Image (cartoon, rainbow, N blue to C red; front, top):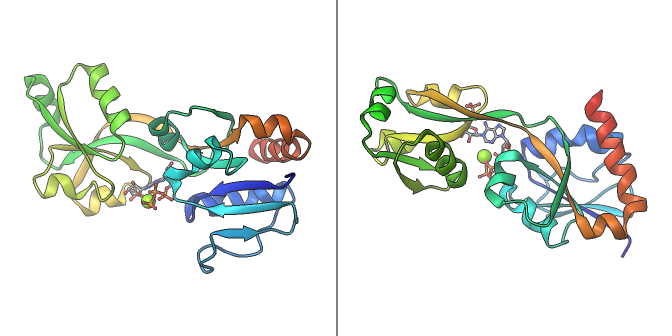
Length: 214
Ligand code: PRT
Ligand code: MG
């Protein structure tokens, strides 16, 4: 099969990848926000898109169900990146991984006291590594969403979550107290596909790279 499959998630990744696809001469036939289709054809008969959950993009590419994908650095770190080649920072869907606590919670003091901190997050790998590197002992509570609720409901002292505008923290009376890392999305490529389909894939990767530089 010489066709190319690109895995994308709906929302910000799809929206911010559109100009990069256009630079590679790829225009989706439909918008996944309005169409319920999970496979979207493009103007190029040999190129199709599959619409998956953001956290599933590395998995589709890892097993070769997609040749290319776009995934956040957060998603890549939590996935582990086995079997994936990620040649390009696309500089899209930017945000920061942060530690946040309720307004008025004396985080520095809590950390200094050496008490175990209850931390809730969807990003358990990054949370674990961050606090381990600080030598802070934590009880980690895995959540799948709405992390901001955890401190308000008494489930946790702190959360580790992505912040872009900061308005979600603010609306829930939380404040960011630590910056873990800057996050953007990367292009991920299946290594076997790159060998077998290089003739089709390389020009797409090159067009993405040129568009990012602009
Ligand atoms: O939403 P869903 O549960 O389907 O999946 P997802 O959250 O994994 O996907 P999606 O599409 O929301 O995010 C895809 C990628 O976008 C993430 O993997 C990040 O790399 C990147 N990204 C950039 C963000 C944000 N900005 C962001 N602000 N991902 C999530 N958020 C959330 C954040 O978790 C928090 O709840 O937005 C809220 C904070 O936003 P502000 O603007 O109020 O600070
Ligand atoms: Mg989301």
